[in-house]
Length: 119
Image (tube, rainbow, N blue to C red; front, side):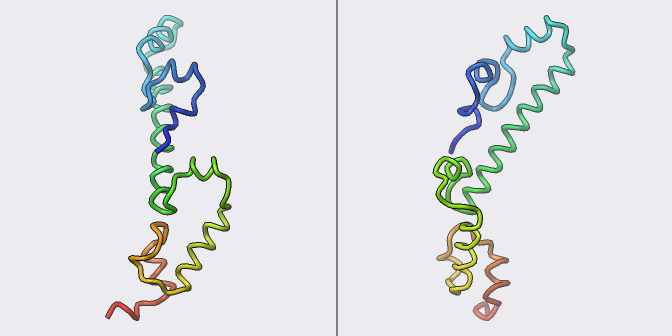
């Protein structure tokens, strides 16, 4: 799975770890420039939150569509409307839940085809 770190520019990669934590030399420079420890902590926590949000989005896309959002953006082949159409088409065909793509939510499946096959 792609990492947000790989999309950062050289200076950001030089100053932050892949998890978004600040490298010691960056922290020392900021302290020397007069920034308080709490301000540095805030900047670092924002970068770490950015990484966490990115990873959650990638994982969500992987579970729902079978590939990550970054892969979708790189390929640029399937629009969001096409993804939704694919999901709805599978539901309309009444396929078994176990045979559907990972992006089919079981609740959506049962809402669309009903609970007839459960009992």
